[in-house]
Image (cartoon, rainbow, N blue to C red):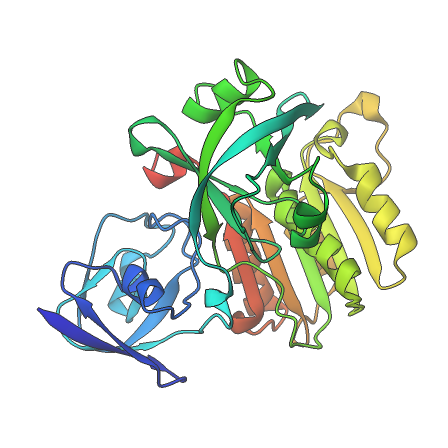
Length: 347
């Protein structure tokens, strides 16, 4: 059975089957909707159901609570239609610019930049044209079809121009993790890895003139780095502040790089924030939760855009507090929550 879905305020429509999710049907129709994990764990695809009825598949309560569902909210990544639908949702402009492709990649280097962070560089085959927006991610396709997602950490022009560097990824070791144990154990240069991408709706909205807050925690810094590189390449000079939150100084694995960007760009400021600095590090900078540092510096975010990437708990707290306490319009909060397999299964 086929149903029609209408998106407001754009008025765009598409048809879908009862057993499809709203997100997959929209993407198949080249209509971009916001999304992140595609597994009901992060809440990035949350939108308002104005008319009609859906059934939700398995999802995390932190992504969509029972009260929110009762109030008419839905997750497009795991909602299937029971009737025609009218949905209030932001469309992602230009989502169809770069087709999703599957391709083999070759490991060119592995560099451990922190005790639990590896910078992995991949070379794309010359026969494939791979385009993406700074901030998007790829999926590694492992044995038995298992997938793991990681953001590109360099801007598209650097991937295309630097054949020796190719694609850069920042991978944190999750002990016992199927993929990261391999990265930190047996993986070596010249290994072949199969990937698919680009995915995700996390990228800079270049048609805006709003000042920007870039907010990262841990390896959520990867897509933020790509966005900074892209802004420099494109000559985008909107006032921008980069906040990077980590536990200790050792976790700021590209601190010098970030400081250098701020020194070279008069439009960019860099603010590292540590939640658990070690005494021996003699840290004299900001401490506490990184999103609270933003609130302390910017009690009024009503004219800003925020791009947040990192642990789901940080992203969710930032969205809630920035909109409730600092007047940030929800439509100008763009997020990519890094969800692990434990996040996806509620562990």
